[in-house]
Length: 188
Image 1 (spheres, rainbow, N blue to C red):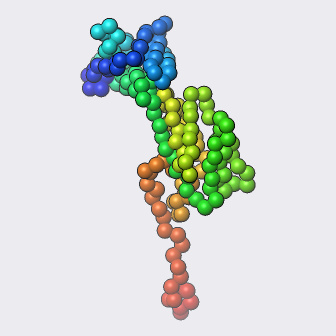
Image 2 (cartoon, rainbow, N blue to C red):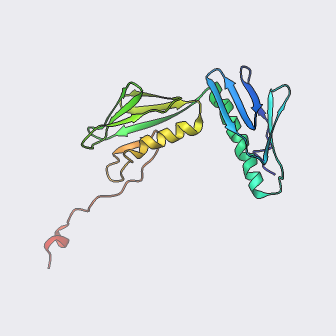
């Protein structure tokens, strides 16, 4: 039995949840999301659409239990996204590293011979304050994927810590080459 999957999802006021042709649609104040439902998963709307329950065809099968918890969390994230949205913060650290918004795309100068233009997909917004990029949107998966794609442009390196990192991420630092000592340098 899935502990996460069997929990009901309460739908806040102002959010509309509907089942349409094997998919679930969630509409709220920030927008609308749609997701196809797996064949072995059943979605039940209870209390006039104020509660959503997720069930699977056979809870004794390991794959079905995994789908149970997965779809429960995906639907809960959809509801949270249309109500409050999601955001990820990235820090750009390094001398000469710059970030700026240029219309619907980010322009990043990351120590390469040319600036990098990163177009933002539909439904994702970004803001830049100093060297902090805030990626926001209603789809949690897309926000995470865009933030990871931006981070991939210049991953933080372990010696000086330069690069793009998530806010609050700790980078394991390595020691550089050790300085030569008198005995090791030219001793007999």
